Image 1 (cartoon, rainbow, N blue to C red):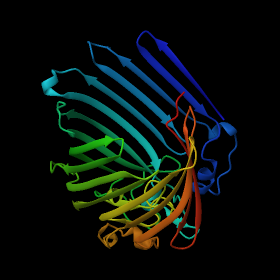
Image 2 (image 1 turned 180 degrees about the vertical axis):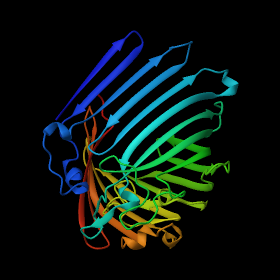
Image 3 (image 1 turned 90 degrees about the vertical axis):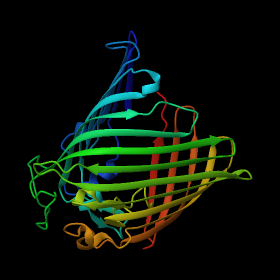
Image 4 (image 1 turned 120 degrees about the vertical axis):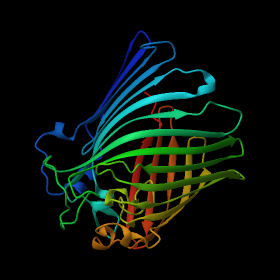
Length: 361
């Protein structure tokens, strides 16, 4: 049940959305002993303001705010015009608060779910990024410089520096870490009626400037390929990465969850200094609106969990490798696409996923 409203003022657009029932199962999974005193405590919502030509022609101010049951995210982005041969530049400010279940959560129910241990991660990021000018090439390059402030709190909102087992949550040992990061990303995208190809390479470098700035080098890659097999369509994805330098537990690669290895909770497969995850899916159209899918997901921390400070993966009994196999349906309507997946993990635990995406309101 929800409500949505759009307001247009000149060229500006304001979208407001409120949901009174959302992820109730996740609410009780993350806080199984909590008691909801009011239905409004289960409310979530979103607000987005887009204002073009705020200061000069072709600039854009984009403000979005989202509140979930346990998390919130505020993003302010301002893009200002430049000559075409210089590309686009933008200033972004983002602040988010969310439960840190992927690294510090406890896998339960044969690793099909992950329960919170009362650790919340607060992130503040301020920076600028530049997109290279468009060309006939399918490659797109982006460079950004950010200041990031990572802060840990408990469910009561108080600052904490250690987890429930007494291990440090940050690289500095304080309740927070500061870092200046240079981010470089290259993307290749190509699509036609027969299929698609997508590559992405991302490098993050923590700049070694005093005092107490986290220094690291983090590499991530993503590759996907899709093509037709008669009336069906086959898609595969490969994701991986590694990090060297002053790694903190929250920087580890978390494996498991609906966007990683289905059949497992968030981070329930493993959390390591390196990782590789593969996903394969065969989509078979049943009629004009309904499509059936068969999928196989696999992931591994490449035996790198012991190189994460405090070794949270070993302490929480994560296997380090896992796979999920299952099937699902995709139902397309004029307003949205409804996804339902049913996955079985290596421990024969069954999990169902429900998602509504590409909503048009």
